[in-house]
Image (cartoon, rainbow, N blue to C red; front, side, top):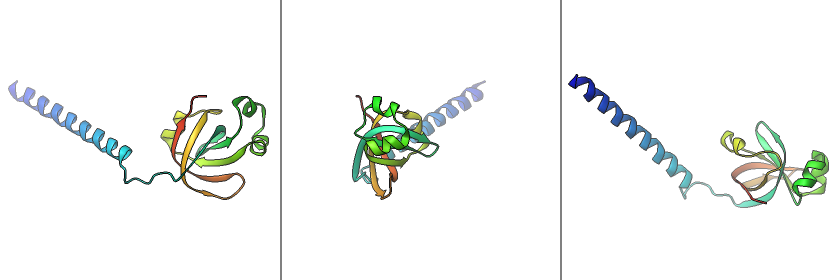
Length: 124
């Protein structure tokens, strides 16, 4: 019986150590100042989504965005940009959310496109 409890304690300690290591590694990469930081930001409403990204258009209210088609919203607003986002980011945002997106570079097109480095939901 003494051997079984010793093994259980060792396994518990190993699981706690692995969990703590994983937590600290994830925390390091989220807060690491050497990670590439966005060089530009844009603010706008998410007016369209697809599997790999979101379409953000500036200078629109949520009411305007809900009443316009995607094409009309692109023409009516400013800074229309398709942003590629990660799976984790995709689950945090919905259509017509007001967001601030940080990016490194944008491809010039209409609408522009780029990869979101940071994205945060803004309170209206």
